[in-house]
Image 1: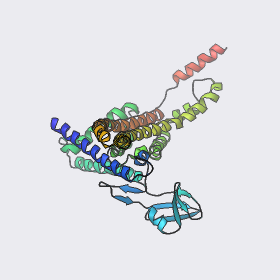
Image 2 (image 1 turned 120 degrees about the vertical axis):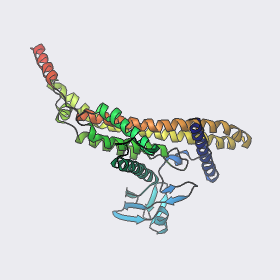
Image 3 (image 1 turned 180 degrees about the vertical axis):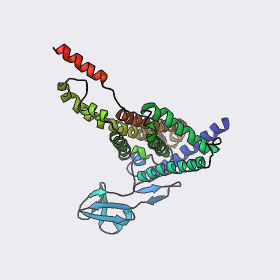
Amino acid sequence: MSKLLRRVAVTVLILVAYNSVILASDATNGQESIIDVMGKVSDHDYFEVIGGTKIYLPRIFLAGGEWYFFSSTNAAVASGEFIKSDAGLLRLDGTPISFDLSITSHLIYVWLGFLLTFIITWIAANRYKRGIGRETEPRGALQNTFEVLFVFVRDDIAKEFIPHSKYEKFVPYLFTLFMAIAFMNLFGLLPWAAAATANITVTATLAGITFFVTQINGTKDHWQHVFMFPGVPAWSRFILTPVEILGLFTKPFALAIRLFANMLSGKIMIVSILGLIFIFTDMFGAYIGVGSGFFWVLLTAALYFLKALVALIQAYVFTLLSAVFIGMAAEEHHHEHDETSVAHAQDVQL
């Protein structure tokens, strides 16, 4: 156990040091500011790999009613039809992009998150088909980890908050959601990578999928409690129905904002604290800047452990709340108590 902790600590320190090297390169190349904090968390038209190599991604967009396909942003500019501006690509006549389907760095990390989830599940499924894990004990760290996580999602999330007669069909979705979000969150720990979940578009899409899964599986009772409210006076429906309809949309909205805000703030905090080394160097000289660097590096290393924990917690919270919303919509209600309440209310009015 102590060897494992030492290896983890060394890995974190290497990541922090590598992050410092990348920031130092940016600080050297930057003209307007010492450290471009938002540039580290924003989406890009290139995919950066270890070593700082940038792979520029295809651009697919609609401008002026016409579709354009280019191998990269540079290719679009080189074509002579577009120019770069602060607002992005613009056609020479000033027409902006009206609809953009370009592949971006965050989209690549979304694909990687789901691809890793698929690969791990596929490997585990093949082992179970061969009887490993069914007829014998699970073998290897990968299968044991998979089983722990799968059983956790199934028993402590799906089974706990979704009716027992229905929870099994939602386990694959919830497990995929948990694993993919966890991977996307953890990618943000890599100095050259980015957390796709720090993009509101990504979190809103994930929350939107949960919204549609929830509403599609809503029971008749669910919709009655949205529009009809059994057991309450008729006049109160004019107030309660709009509130309930609004509540259908505020739930996924809260899901998207919670995940987005937590992952964005974590990356900004790490970059900002490491950036203090170069800010202090620029303000007070190399001795103070480098001398204070020891403290900032240790603080960043501690934040790395915290951010890794937050990455897993946020994946758990998103999956848990998705299960809660699905369970509330899929639950069958009993109205005997509601009918009794209505009768009692009528007696009181009489």
